[in-house]
Amino acid sequence: MDDRTLSDLLSGFGLSEKEIDTYLSLLEHGEAKASTIATAAGVSKRYVYSVSESLAARGFVEVNDHAVPTTIRANPPEEVIERLRADVEAIRPGLEDRFSRVEPDAEQFEGVKSRVTVLKRIRTLIEGADEELTLSLPASLLPEFHEALTAAVDRGVLVLLIVSDAGEETADPSAVAGVASVVRRWGEAMPTLLAADSAVGMVSPAELLSRANSDRQAIIFAQEQLTPVIAGSFLGNYWPVATESWIAEPASLPAEYTNFRHAAFQAMVHRDAGTTLRAIVGGRDTVTGETVEVDGEVRLVRQSLVEPTTNEFPVQHSIAIETPDGTVTIGGRGAFIEDVEADLVRLEAV
Image (tube, rainbow, N blue to C red; front, side, top):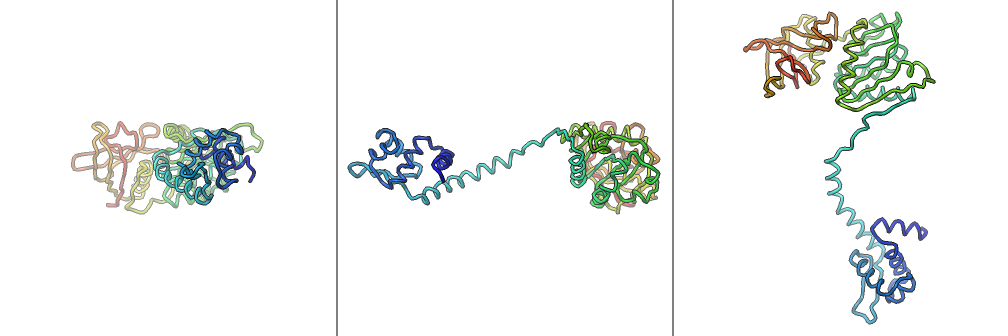
C-alpha cells in the first residue's frame, strides 16, 4: 500500500495530516526521541509532544516520560487495529438502534421510458401484491403475465383485470379462466393502469407497451394518497364499459378479509351461489369514531365488481347486515355514508 492510500485511510479515523505524518514516522523508527520524530516528520518538537499525547490517548503510541530524554514508542499495529475494531463495535448498537427507527422513504415517483423495464415492473408489482390488484393489460401481453396473475389469485389476492384491445379470442371464458378474480374485456386500446394494495401504482400509455420505439413514458409511484385514485379511475371509468368474461368461484368459508372490496366481492358471489352468509365485522363507528364489532346475517351487497351491478353510485361497495339492533351498513376504508368503517370482515356460511 502506498503512503497516499495509507494516509487517506488513517484520516478516516479522525487523524489530521500532521498527526498522520508523525505517526508514520514513529512506525518507521519504532521508538525515538521527540527531536528525531520532529525532524523526520517536518514538524516542531513541541508539536510532536502535543501530537504524541493525542495519539497515546487513542492507543496509537506510548509516551515514556520517565526517561531522559522522553521517548515515544509506536504500539504494535495489531494492538492498534484491535483498539479501533473495539471502538467501531462499541458504536454498532447505537447506529443499529437509530437505523431501525428511521425507515428510508421510498421513491415516490419514477418515469420509465423503456418498454422492457415497464414489463419487469408490472411483473414485480403483480408478484408483490398481498390483498388487491387492479390492472389493465393489452390482450397481446396476457400470456406473458398469465402465470404471475394466476399465482396472485391462488394466494388470495383480489385481482380485477381488464384485457384491452381484445379480439374475439378472449370472449371465450376458458381463454382467461383463473388469471383473475374477475376478468373484463374491451375491444379498444387503453392505458395500462395498475394499483397494488392501495400503496403502489403505475400508469403507462398504450403506445409504450405496443411499440418498442415509443417516446412515451410510464409513471410508477409509491404514494398512498394517489394509488386509490388510480384504482377509483379504473373502477369508475374503465370497468363499467368493459364486458365481463370470467368470474372466479367463491372462496372456501369461513374466510377473513382486511381488504373490504374483497369481502364485498366474496359476499356477492356467495349470495349469487345461494349461500346464506353471516358477517362478523370489526371497525369504527363512522359518526363517533368508537371501535365497534357487529355480527349478523348479510342481507344486501352494493357493488360494481360483477354483473349485475347493485351499487347506487360509482365505486360504491358496502354490505348491509341484520343485527339484533337493526340493519347496519358496512363500508371499507374512508367510509362515511355507511354506519361502520371496517378493518376486518369474517364471512361464514349459515
